[in-house]
Image (cartoon, rainbow, N blue to C red; front, side, top):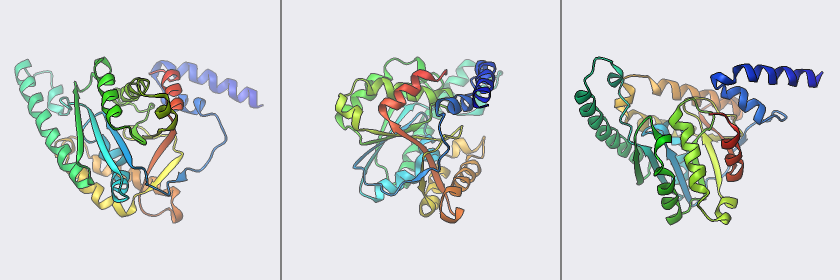
Length: 278
């Protein structure tokens, strides 16, 4: 019976693969007994790196743990991979002229950087780095991975937060590939020791770690509110607050707020990046 079920699931996967159904791929990749996410008990890592494809992903996906790491004495750094220039719905209007679009993009880049700095200050993070790859074309920029490797080599992180390889936004899963490529340039000892936590923004993760951010949620909401340019077009605050409330189902009593992650080794993330059809 088990073989029949697995054969049926594989057949369904093959039919859906053309549509890049990452949830199905995740189920097949992590084919194992179901388990409850483990509550993160310590935030004692000294060097924490957060990779954000866009200015706001770091707040939405792991703003609560950024606060907790800082409060525990850790040094948190955020690397923004793109310039965020496509983050205005008006740029997708077919009637806009190329000159007007370029001027608007330059304005959006400046505004989003200011918002990122304001949000990071509310999270208690002061070390920010802007890679400025073109928004929406992150995977086409061959300079980002070596620059990220150089950044990490100067200050090797103990723990890295980044989007999930199963995220539905192209720049998000391309960020995983870039991190893997950058990490491959790092010493083997670092690759063997660093831990990785994938956060969720545009798609849920297959969570094996949970962080209680009930005490940090008000501060996280303030940081989210700093991204006013992004909140004009979509109610991210309601969406993220709802997601973090739902994730609290894994906390004692199911109350409060939590952020969920898939934690793995660098080698496991590399394997996932190779196996997942993106």
